[in-house]
Image (cartoon, rainbow over all chains, first blue to last red; front, top):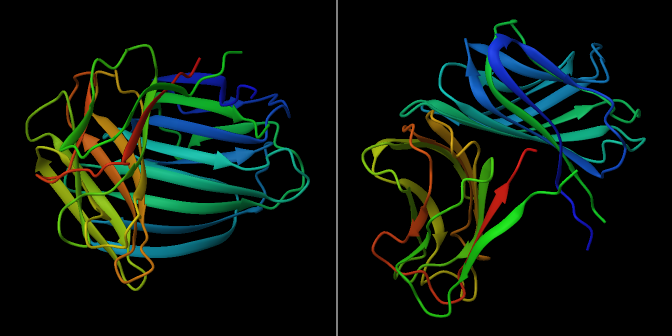
Length: 159
Length: 170
């Protein structure tokens, strides 16, 4: 069985930048997985594919915080918010399926943001309405605040 | 480019056990993942897994999202001595049925507080089924070198299995 689950690239945010772009992503894998662990001033952490800033994204969320569970959805977004950063380290894993296919791209998001008695847990599904293969991913703080942490992009093969 | 996602250790129970511990976890990875299939011998339909590390004290917290097929709920835990993750199959649930789960701990060596993500399902073709997602936090700057799964005073039954993987980001 061939090896799979390969690290493609890693970026360490040292607190002096608010974004990174993973570019020139080869079509060598079946799926992609982007992980992030880190902090920043309070802001959203977002992704965009292939520099697409049009309203081609949507997302549905089920979540809970200390106040209880909820679910909501947003359509025609210009980015996918994958996490809500603050001073407590959070983890978010983002699975991007069949990223090189000619169909729209489905994304699953696992966000774990406990703050010792508060915080939240989110599970989300997102869609990028594009038939283009994903060749770049921009990961960025939506308010432009600098980030501390690590982001890694993995490639996963199905054969 | 090296592949990653390496099996560090596994423990498939051939007899019941009160806990399963992975000790002396090497510091050669970036993240850790545990995948398990487990069932407890407590004489109820469902019960709780406790997860601890080499770090002791009231440093474990979490917030849980859980659905049981009819309702969805949220609950928070803080200042605890373990991550309490419920609910898994126990002795009076559907026979031959084990809950499945995954614990992901990124940057387990980092000198910061450590978030962790937990996902688990329990199904029994009856009224005691659950799907849950938990955001955990270990409020400690100590590197994680051991992980232990316990049954709150009850035993994991024979056939329960636990697999520890290491993931490198380079």
